[in-house]
Length: 460
Image 1 (cartoon, rainbow, N blue to C red):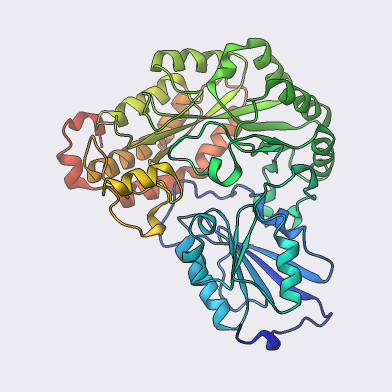
Image 2: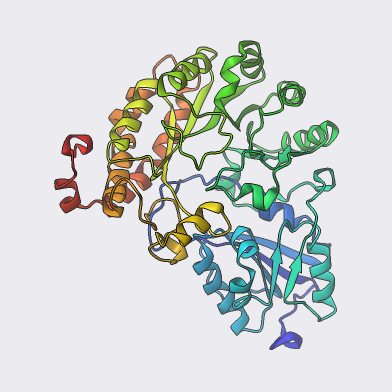
């Protein structure tokens, strides 16, 4: 550990800890927004540091890391798409003799790769690891690998240090987590591997304490970051009563099965539910979508959407292009479905084989993965050979769908005037409009567009 004894000390003798969320700025992403979504990961980790540390959070969606920042120790959390940028940042600090701890999804599934750039790699959920890492750091004996063999007890989580986030993260939404884990086990998703297939819950008393803490902040809107907040109805009803008592408007991840219980939908609306984020993923039923509670025939899904809308609840809908069942018809078909059903905030992306998922192993075995430049594993770029079209057709079809759905005329057409949260959804759509339009233009391929098998599907 070069330079261990020469790290700069603060005038008050506190050690400087820098927590970084990297972001690759070479290209625009579809989810780039003026008001970025507030992640809980780094604010939670920041709360584990003692008063002997001065802790700062640097989210590169807001401020770029230069590498010259004053720091005694650096923690970096990384997704697969941001791994190359995370490695570049780690290399800058280590060149100065500053130890770097690398964690997050990508480091957990590929610890040896991350270890080339980091002093130490944290594998798994970091809450139980942080005290050990800090103790070893202070004793001057950091280990190359720290692995959590157990999942975090959510009732032991401290109040997240949300005050360390930039105001742009805190202006619009406050994040809340009441559970972790997902039993669906879709082949393309890393959540079961990272957070487990069993849903772990935070007690009602702790959730109430969280809400009391969040009620002191500026935002009166919550985003519940649980993988599926409505899966356990009775428990969610108890938490919704707390939302109502504290006066929060809220959004959460869910599925279309809620449409089958109108009493439950009524309770959702009365508790202040603005919208549900639903992973439709496909209008068909790809084999990669195991236990998907949102997938069905398009007419069934349309009826379910209508029931949810009837109760004044909006929908943020996720759709994925590139399943083996998809042909070049999928783009026009999906865009038409979104517009006709009035899904207020569509989230479209390209199927991406993330390391550590069954999908990655399958496509790797079939030699269908084109490259492993992780910076393109952002769900906006094609990195594998699809079965029902060429990679170029998949990329162009996605660009067309993105361009169409982000146009002002399309936004106003699907967000109807009687929508209960019309202003919110217009704001959300237009906060993404510039980034999505720029991305569509950067991906646009006129030659491919001109030779699509059925050109009418991608009207320019």
